[in-house]
Length: 449
Image: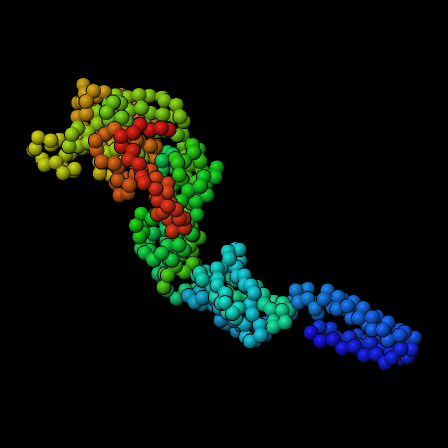
């Protein structure tokens, strides 16, 4: 900081005081008061200096942040086309560079026409910014760049460009499930990918693009079942009469090397009444609750020793009025003591491997007293007809107090609810959380229905 004062002596009417601002950019010359003693003149000079310094500090020259931003167009470059009609390659990251050695980038925002922002990273020296997630194909982008020069004065540049069409035809599409309709409170949402996705960064892109909106709002999470399949569910069962809308924003998004997101059909589901059937294998009874109230209790028989019914929560997969059940389909040798070939009516399926709740008129004498089936839950034809008419896909069928294994989580139906919430969330790449020990529900009665 430099200051210069000059005065010619007391009593000289032509005396001048010259002050340079701290930046050295502006000089102020004023006539000094006449007939003042040197000591008085010095005091007034110092006062003028202080006033000028204060005025300069509050003005646009002394405070760079108060200056109007300069046009940084010729000082900022990006790796896009320079001529009219050129398009940015969406396969490559967007790069913004400060050309002048005295400039640095302070902020960059890049967004497409729909308002989707592109994440990016700024170098430590402020000379370069680059995008850290893919650009969409065939999209229009606006980029706003903020800079400052070596004196701290702010600069601005606004860029606009279009991205082109990917050179590859490899597309990642998603098939949401189940089909549109009304389901029970236990129905998970499924997403089947057309290509396997193993890389964690690519999974992040995919999962972030899979949107589930509900009315009323119900927080939930995706869980990666394998490289091509995800399931979505809330912490607890869906509230009755929830509307679920599922869609993807993957279209045109780069997922990986030569792999781009494709179009996906939206899905809307409706949740019906809260219907939960609880089978107590030890008490040989099945109790049906609707919206929290018990509406029917049915005597049943479940799996006998060696064929015990699976414990845990299952979800109704479908209903079949007639099914031919044969022991050979579950590994029982034809002609053996356990072999069977039976016509079965009012069959409500809960696993893909062949576990049903169905009519079993041949075991009415054991229903309510003993477990004599090969794993299914059997009841009278009248009760099976009632059950068949009062449940729908997605309704919950829970088995407790059986000596069978716990229902498989995936692959044999929907055993999703047998994973506690923390472990479920750990199956998402977008959520984190400590995994807590999972309780074995097989020997417990349900605390809520």
